[in-house]
Length: 429
Ligand code: GLN
Image (cartoon, rainbow, N blue to C red):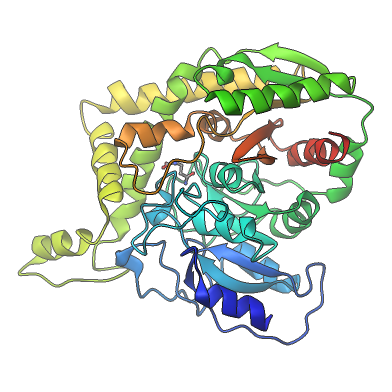
């Protein structure tokens, strides 16, 4: 534990925002003594929680998020609050007020975001498991870029109580891990109904045994989304198709699928996510939460305080306010909700024909830090992950190596299938 804490304080990848005081008493419980890093948009009682924003730079929460309470009760030890894109808005980890995180396998490259620090700490072998949050890909993309596992659970399967809200109808907390069994063990602890979260699903907690049962199936019907191979960088496509070939050789049935509404998914996501973000971030007004920079009058106080938000967060608030405003609401926001419904219906329909669906996680390899793409170019990194966020279904990143990940998607509420297929594939292929 001492070496671990020294490594976290040294932090060569800039993956850590705060190292808390760690209680080294022996623990019991299913995760006894397991060191876990927690993304810094998840509240930890008495430990600074910043969302990587200047506006919450000094915020010390008075209570634990439900997932943190459950981890502690299971004997896990919170050893770090990890870096992220400010308010989880970003795909590379570069939008943090605390500076960018580096990729553990190539420090000149981004580790992916927004759960950049969590994925980097797992990818570097510093911690076995970390918690991330995923709104449009923020667990899966950094997991792919850092060659580790990462699960975006079914929406509502893991409590959001104590997660600093970005886009409430999409936000989920999930595990990032170097090992799929540990990922499953942590899911058993953090999942389950929570009366403190109004959108929590009344389902039993995740079951590792059920995942193992699914893993032992004779053969699988595996869907491959043809549209998710268009425009994917050649090295990623090759690795993915080689994976599909190995599945076929093992006697699994591969079924071609289509996502006709896929062309609307990214636009719909960025309308819905910015709309919800603009509403969720209205609370940082210098009066109720966070830092206040006093001005001449109320308006001046608002302007000075809210100028603490970084450029990407301000951009999202402006876009979100626009798409919700009178006269544009029907043209953008309502249309996006309709597109979301189309995407969800198409994805739900797939599972009449297949057990799981696989697609690449990342459309390109990790770019260098400071590449300076346009905002829309960065948004395109989420092309392959957002459809499953809009649908609310579980999606697991399985690392294929060399910064390439495959997403394993299962029906709504059946996270055990994603993990079970991951267990199967990691053993059989
Ligand atoms: N990259 C996406 C965005 O910036 C997703 C972020 C996330 O999942 N939190 O909105």
